[in-house]
Image 1 (cartoon, rainbow over the protein chains, first blue to last red):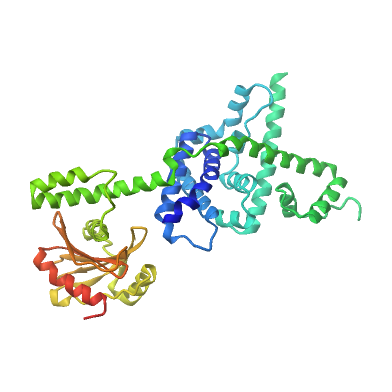
Image 2 (tube, rainbow over the protein chains, first blue to last red; image 1 turned 60 degrees about the vertical axis):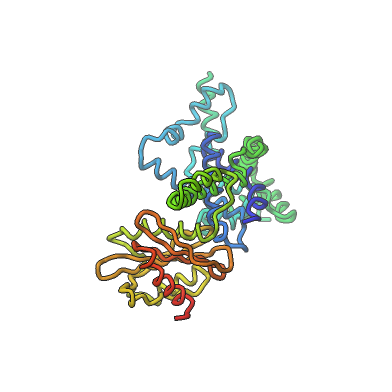
Length: 168
Length: 261
């Protein structure tokens, strides 16, 4: 248990970054990270010593997020999800010209694609680790990554064209 | 080179976007992309999106860790909530012994209080598990006595210690089965017994600090517990019984678990 602090703390900034990108709310993100760390501490002795600690933590955090998401969907009207369906228009109206918040756009992707773009593209986890975190084969990771990026590109392009039409 | 045929796989392209290719393979991709301007533009766009996403989140990453997420604080919070449980129980015991000492004891309670003795936390865990599952009608145990061998092998494996089910028939108790529980920082095992009248008794085992201690008696509500530590494991026998009824059973369990019977 003594090593938990030394091993976990350096990884907290990355967990906060991933949580914030998922939730786009600073407090909610820290709640998620706190749950993640508490769970990690409670399972500290059960973790695989030879496994990658970072991947393990991201797995816990992503699973917590996904199950919260499912609960929210079951409950129906959840602010987070309502917001998620119409984020880019809001972002456009607020930001005016060309800046579209990439996080709001990212939010329009299915969770599996969104998480992969973050875990691979931002957190720089290996494709193998990403596959373990998501619980899918490597090939699925690669195709989802490809689809996710394609989709993000399309969304950003459409955002730009609708914006241009509106400005004219 | 056959001209317009693009020979790079999608996976390699993703690795290119992620900047994970070695020099040689990157050069090969770049050479191909040079021949396919439309694709090159798409790939460049994806790389830019990746860069935008990273820079968008840069500030978040650079933020100092909030106090509430510091590991020491999270652990202190865990210990406090845990401590609170045992201190109130301990305070109740002290009150039972003497009002005056209870007052003194209450002064010792607080964040500065030292962590509970291992036997206390084992007894606490045992009683919590007892309260939860003894009232259970539909699923009192996870694995029933019909699969006793499997049960004991499974629990032994998860505990990291060979576990035997002591024979308590001299006391009128027979094994119902058992279950795996979270306990302390690892796993705990609970074996449940009942007698002809349906009274239930549990044996609780989990890893605990310490080499060997005497039996410690604790009563919470109707549930009485004898707990002890032996060779890095904590044991507890819990039942709705008096101290005198439970003590010989605890001794039998001690001998039975150690294979000393």
